[in-house]
Image (cartoon, rainbow, N blue to C red; front, side, top):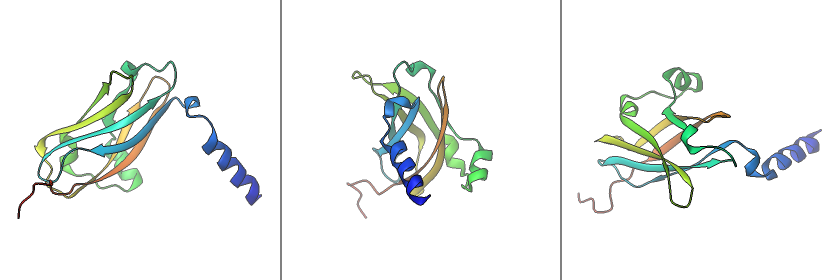
Length: 134
């Protein structure tokens, strides 16, 4: 029975990504502590998925509570928008109007497409900028 479970997990992991309607990639941070938030997250769309149908938001406070995440007031300052690059790849752009004063952000993202909805937790560790002087 254990070998069957391992085989099924392996088959799921090896199945083609194009079969999934929507995927959320990793986050890339372009800012540091005491700076305005600037980050992006790659989205993977299946063939036929329209980038205009993708809606991105911070998950609701009830979703945070359901998974045991702490809701912090700064999270409401994060703006989420989608950007299509010339090569056709789709990114979520994260930005804020206020500087990030906490050394890390822990939040849950909600991504809705025409065919599915996904939630994913992210933790961002913000280091001081490289030109930071004591």
